[in-house]
Length: 185
Image (cartoon, rainbow, N blue to C red; front, side):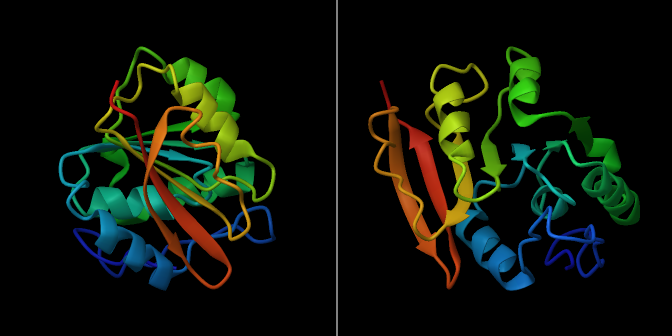
């Protein structure tokens, strides 16, 4: 795992041992950032279920103004901290070692995010719970892009009912990225 492009290009990133996190492969990360490259420069980025921080660090390396990382696993936080030091991107970040839903409540009314990325545990409906929370949140507006990673068979038919518009869905061999925005009111 490494930073693909930008100011920290080619710097290797550390990932925690075990199966508590699933670091996004370099190939998938590159595909993802090719799709959102116009959203990144100068953006405020929220990386939920951040793991070792590979996605948020990539965003910072490519010009995001700042990033908030939310992760609850100590081993992942240790790797994330080390990765931020290695890439010298820590000055543009806030790292919250908290449950995602506690963090969302704590971030409310303090920040507005241009891009939110989440890679929750698969098949536990965590992405739906986050989207339900964000439905009425002040952290996003109609221009905010929300991306979540999920297993291929994750049902997303509820998006319209929650007030979201499916922008695109990118399927890979074993998972997918889903891109949504809040419907214009």
